[in-house]
Image (cartoon, rainbow, N blue to C red; front, side):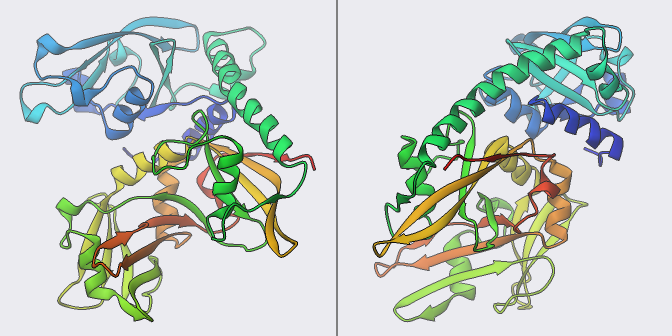
Length: 392
């Protein structure tokens, strides 16, 4: 997808502020002529997350085509449409999507938003529609009605979670273990959330990220292993063997890697926008680029993890020689701006942490690689957030 314009970003922000979850697609000139659009990774992820369609389960051929009732939102009203989702017999069955009437609705390289509501798909032309004018119009229009319905549904869970957090914040609570992760684990336990390694959001679609407020540490975004099939190294063990070091009885690689400078292990990130990849590079001439992340993979992971997030700040207080947490503030973000992710990586605002260690048994464990963002930089990755002060 091409870079979004400032106008388009601002229009998407308007929808984000209204709790509208959407995915984006860009019809090409060739696609409009042939009546086909690629169902990109973000589109496939969105449709699957909404239980609308799973391309992974779809067989190839026209006989396996799926059609979904759809509407094209215009400035004047709704245009009835149908979405066709299919995998052709040719070209390895690359997932395709097409909306009836889209050729008269959009020009080549327009950015279109796709929104699911009650198992129908709604398409809005982000490039052409004056969303601000439509949302603020005194006369009710279909976009207003759709946004209002989605806003009510989205806010129900956030309000429910906020009430629970206010109860927890009434007094300091003892840490459930002694570790950096104690703050998150304590809160999840109090909320009745099972501690597991699931990549799904924590509370009914909302991701929880707790942090000790006065430390000023970077905030965790997500963990994502490299695309091993595309990489020179094929495992975390190979990375550890090449760059690890001994600390007491441990052999490990705990380090931060950025695009700005090489770290003490000679490691650095490198963005290659031409092939849409993020690479990790070594100053060892025999190694050079050794692992690869597809930017599509990172974008999808970011969307999956932080579609909606509560960033919860707490003070760390010692009572009776034991650490306690006073949860005090929530920053509520929605819908990261994917184009910003790449820029923030290039600017060194988003960095990567390796946390690789060899156990005494010889096995290797990797807690990451974890992508982190600098403190106070959330507003560079997410549209305007809401701040809630917890009662205590």
